[in-house]
Image 1 (cartoon, one colour):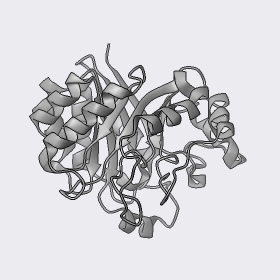
Image 2 (cartoon, rainbow, N blue to C red; image 1 turned 90 degrees about the horizontal axis):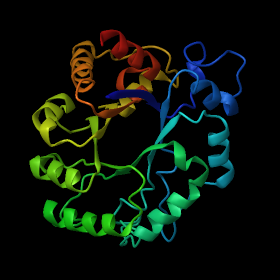
Image 3 (cartoon, rainbow, N blue to C red; image 1 turned 90 degrees about the vertical axis):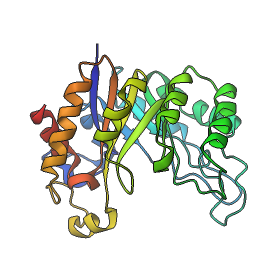
Length: 278
């Protein structure tokens, strides 16, 4: 049976009062009330981890709090630390933690309180130029070595931002290793609706769709930290996304749909619009 699971990218937005949160709610209580509206959330706060000579891991107290504030059926889609996905440090030295299975194991261990609530762990790679990785094949070889060395019992996904590498070879590679493709709508990448329809026959049981948006700075300037109204409605695009999700709901797949405020201006309103269209 297919599952289309909606959630937002993070939840710490005071301007969602009236949309998601009660007016008298304290920020530390947001997640508990969020979980009454949605069954999943994307966590990106542990992504920005890489320093020049070390990397940060989640604090046990924080992870335990997230577990206590959510029901057993709740799911987290979690961006893994960029220590795993950046070939170079901020000062352009070689990052020895890049695709290091031991670093991944340490990260997994730090998430122990929510192990049973992990919907998907996501490795987000930026655009990989030739100074970082020679070519797509070399990247796949490096990933294969990593996959062979890690605990494969936790669901893992990969977001790729090299448009020319998002091809049949890539999806066959992911399916072979039972890795979920993470599709992002935005930046310089091709439209995800067209991409998913083109390669649907190669996609595995679980996929992730991240509705992110193209111009982060522009929409932030207009929003002024208020994310309770639509700023840049994408009516036509949203109709296509809803049609795709309706189709995928009949395919037997699990689809995590993570919506960012930067997509239209208010993630909760975007989710509502998609569900109505479906």
